[in-house]
Amino acid sequence: MAERNHTVPLPSERRPTPTAALFDLLGRRWALRVLWELRDEPVSFQALQERCDSMSPSVLSQRLGELREAGLVEKGEDGAYRLTEQGSTLLDRLRWVEEWTAQWGGQRGRPAKDERTGGTT
Image 1 (cartoon, rainbow, N blue to C red):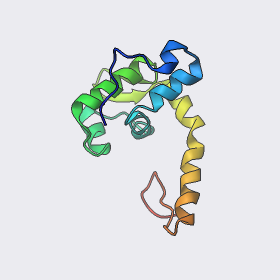
Image 2: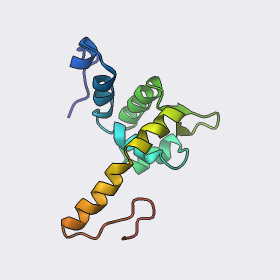
Image 3: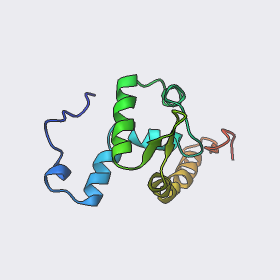
Image 4: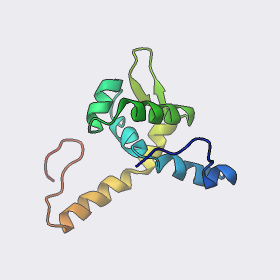
């Protein structure tokens, strides 16, 4: 799937609302995964790339730039990426997804995995 052409505005960019802008940002490939991987600790670019199934460096760089511009991610003096206070607040609001997927996985006949430890619940 090709990345969005930056010369063609998204519908929310033509008629912006905060909700539409957030949906557009989070709907971009890998954006939510990047935020999720930063949930517990600062992570270097290389480690983040590995955690995201070795996504291409150009896509990761683009996503990090967009998330930084949106004020959800920051780059520390040590070079590691971390969630900002706004990014942490957003992920806190999305914790229900973790709970829902644990239940959903169990309903599908799979043991529910604890996302933090990797073990089954």
